[in-house]
Every structure is written in structure tokens, then in C-alpha cells.
Length: 470
Image (cartoon, rainbow, N blue to C red; front, side, top):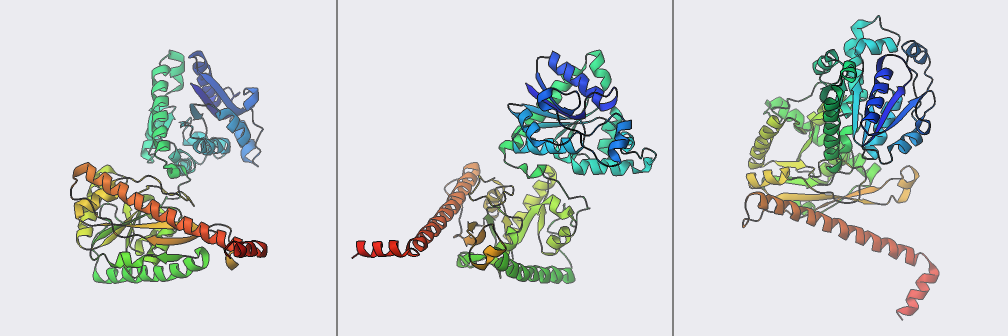
């Protein structure tokens, strides 16, 4: 394999740099190609310059750490043909390395080389042991939550990471393992798991989990009971909040995104429960959809993490959104509760693509969950397509990106001649095909309209066309 080790410092005589040198020696002896990105005595093609951070660089030097400058060109050069990236520290160089690895589909594993006291010493505040918990939370937030596999360099680190809720798979490989010859199976297992996990994620196109996660607050809603019935006052409060949100969103959507709507009648024609689905191409496309589907009230589903965001968590709670749990056990209960809501006549919205791709112009493959629930509840699917168009008029002064239109398609019903998995897959594929056709038809109309305007805006072309048509 081609393995890239990223560590700020390689030539110190203790701590993480020493472990990185042992790792490099072992992997090289095992027949792997090892590329080390570091400041100092790294291999020449992948050497980075020193990063100077006032105060912190001086204090880190006492601990044998010199920060490396996050050089994108060097990292991209090191990643060519690489099978795995191993991050040794959680500093700017490694954060940049993780970001580029995700953009180039290279699997990543990270080491947690020292405990919180060690990082406090590097920062020059080793005396402040009371801040250990804060250190673990900051490191989880800034880097480690984006890694599915972490190598712990001691049992104590392993226990601390469990205590502070690190969600990754934790592998224990201690410094002594390199000396007594037991490191091989442990390292091979950790590397194989990291590669397998990240390859699955890359193939599923769900890279949003690798973005910086600001979901650090307690959830604003009970994940286990997202549809919990509320007292009369709170039901009135949430209804008032929903329609005020739609009213404000209508103004913002028109001014900022030039929102247009088409096919509202297709939504009105469906009496009772239904699942609405759409492509997911913008952070606030749920607001655009709510505006386009008004006055009907839609319950929007959202990832669990959004209910832990500062400020946003209360806004989406009061607007009536519900979280999709990440726990398998709770997800089964969520499906059953949603099916009951649909049978009660509610309309619930899902994004079957499963992840957000900003300003993506196509329709990505769909997951089956929403279609399974629709069949179990005996309700139709109402597809909605977010279509993009070039920015025109005065908006071009302050906006460069696309404007939006929402096309609501006719309801789609399951085929009663089929059953089981075939029925779910057929409904999913037919819904996606309808959405693709609506998107292509609108884009073709837009293209013809643009071509027409361009043609008749030129007097010579207009005269030529007039002669051709007599």
C-alpha cells in the first residue's frame, strides 16, 4: 500500500514524533511505500515549511513540536496514488490534510498520541488540569469527529475518548507494541477497517459528515418521541411559528432566490396523508418548499445534528421539523411513528438523496426509506423538483449564483401488482424518473427561451430569420 503519514514534526526524540518514526520504519520494513509530510527531516518532496503561531509555537517547541505549514500543493502531491492517510496530530497541517483527503476520496485514520495533559503542555498551560475535559471536546469538534477510526496510543487515552463521547472506532496501539513485535496485526486491522469504512462513505456520496460539525448543544427535541403530542398552547405556538416562518421565508425566497412555483394543484388534489420528496441542493431549500406548498402544512424531516446547532435548533423545532435518529433502534421506532402520522392525514417531507450537495443540477440516486413508509401507510408520493436558472435582472448586482423554481409533480402511487422489495424499488425508481423528466423538460424550455432571446436581440439575425420564413 501507499501510506501517507502527516505529522508536524518527525525529528523529536520523544512523544508523537518518535512514534511517527517508529511507524514509518515498521511500514517501510513491511513493504509499504511510506510518504511523510512534515516539517524538518521529512522526505524531500513532501517537506513543508514552518508555521509560526505567536506564543503557541514557542511553548510547543519546549515539548519537541514545531508546527508545519498546511501546504495544499505538497499534500496533493503526496496523495497521488495513496491508499490511506494517517494523521498523527490535530493541528492546522493535519486538518488541512484531512480536508484534502476527503476531497480526493483517500481514506483517513487519525492517531490520538497523547492525553489532554499532553496537549495542555504543548499549549503552555499544563498547570490547568481542570481544562482537560474542554481539550477533549475541542479536539473532537475540530478534527476527530470527522474520522471514523482513531488509534489510541494508550489504554488511558482510549478510556478518556469513550468518556467524552468520541463516536469513532477506537484501536489501541501502544508505543511498546512497536518494540515487542505485536504491532503488526493491530495496525493491519486498524488500517483495513479505516479503508473499508471510508470507501463505503465515499461510494454513498455522504461526505457531509466530514464537514466541521457545530452540533455541540443538547438536542432541542426528544429524539425518541419526535411526534410527541403537545398541549393546546404549544400546538397553537408551533402552528403560529410555522406560518410566520413561511411568511418570512416567502419574502426572503423571492428577494434572494427569485423563487417560482409550478404545479400547486398536484398537491391540493391529494386529500389526506402523503410523503413529499425532493432533491436537496441548498441549506434553506426546505423553506423554499414550504413556501411553494403553502398553505398546506408540511412536516419536514432533518438530520439529528441540526437539532443541536446554536440558535438554529430552536427555530427548526418551533417550525415543526422532526429529527431522523442516527440510532438503529430509534430509527425503527421513528419509521413506525411516521407511518402513524401519515395514516392520520399528515404530510411529511423527506430528502431521499440522503445528503446535501450545494447547487447540484441533477437528481442523485434515492434511498428506499421514504418509499417503504409510503407503501406501509398506504399513501402516495408527491415529488417536488428544485430547478435552478441563471440569475437575471437587478439581482445580478448582488447575486452570482442560481435562482430557483419548485416544480410539484403529480402524485405517484405504488403498483398494487407488485409486493415486497420489488414494489418499494419500483416506486422509488418511477418517482426518480418523473423528477428527472420534469427537470430535463424545464431545462430544455429554459434553454430554448434563452436561445430565442439571444437570437432576436441581434438585428441581423432577426432579419435573416424573417427572410427565411418569408
